[in-house]
Image (cartoon, rainbow, N blue to C red):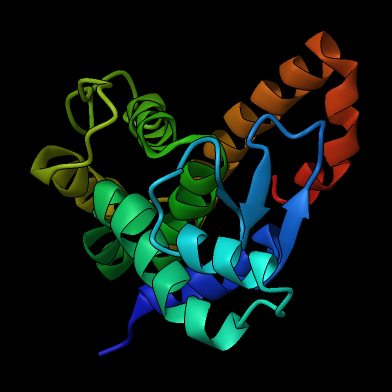
Length: 194
């Protein structure tokens, strides 16, 4: 059996900076390590080790922290989006929801999946609208299964449409953030994720 989490994690780490510690004053998340924000996740188990190594003037032991980072992302971002169940139906959709969830939060990413499914149901001819609550449970998984089984179009076309809808919401969010807070243009690399 394929562990789709590993694929999603590896792809997201390309954006988050696996093994990199940053302190960008323009980042509302403050100090980060492998994309884990000290502001938003101060209790992450790796912070005491990083602090100790910095105090002792030692380099950060990336190999020691990697399993902790991987576990953090699995528990904080993969499980809340029902990543394993999503990936059984569509690895591409699971990857998109995971990556967006890491960047903007899992509830919002899950809501955007639910909205996408509602937009593609042909005014409830194919299936009933979902409650957009950001909770990917059996109803969202079941609805995704029905949506992907509809012919025409093909499953690949439906997947692409869902991903485009999620991406457009993600793009709109970042467009609004950068328009309202021009200093966020520092994070222009976000457009590579859309």
